[in-house]
Image (tube, rainbow, N blue to C red; front, side, top):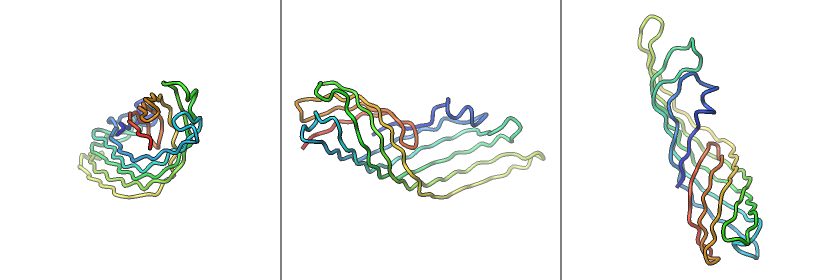
Amino acid sequence: MSYIGIPDMILDPLLVEHPEISGISYALEIRSFGRKGLHSRISGLYSLEYSRVRGEGTWRVQEDDLRKSGWGRLTQYRLSATLILSVLPGLVVHPYFGLGIGIEKAFLLSEGSYADELGTEINERFEGDRILPVLHLPLGLSLNFDNRYELRIEGGFKNGFYLGAGLQVVF
C-alpha cells in the first residue's frame, strides 16, 4: 500500500486555487533477482497496481477565471516493468533506484458547479477513460533480513508522486 498525490509545488504554478489531491495505491509485485538473490546488483520488478486519487474543493486556473467548486476522482489500473539497480547490495541496509515503463487504464469522474457573470449556477459533470503510458522512477532503501526477507521504504514517481513501504519474502 502506498500514499500517492500531487504536491502543492507542482500544482501552484499551474492553478491559482486548488484542493489537495491525494489517494491510496495497492500493488501486487513480483521481483526477479540474479544468482545472488537479494545481493544481486540488478533486479526486475513487475507490478500490477490499483489506485484511487481524489480531490475536493475550489478550483481556479487563472485569477480572472470563475471559481469552481466540486470534486474529482481518478481510478487507475497499471501494469509495469521496472529495472532496479541496488547500490552496495551486499550490505544489510542499502539504497536502490530504478527506471520502469508500463501502461495504465485511467477513469476520471468529476462534478462541479460555478456561478457565471449573471449569478446563474451552472453544474458540470465529466466522465471519461484513457489508456496512458506509465513512467516509474523509484528511489528507496532496502533492509535485508537473513537473505529471505526484505523491508523496503520507497518513494518516487509513477504517474504521480508516492511514498510507501513493503515487506518482501524471497522464495
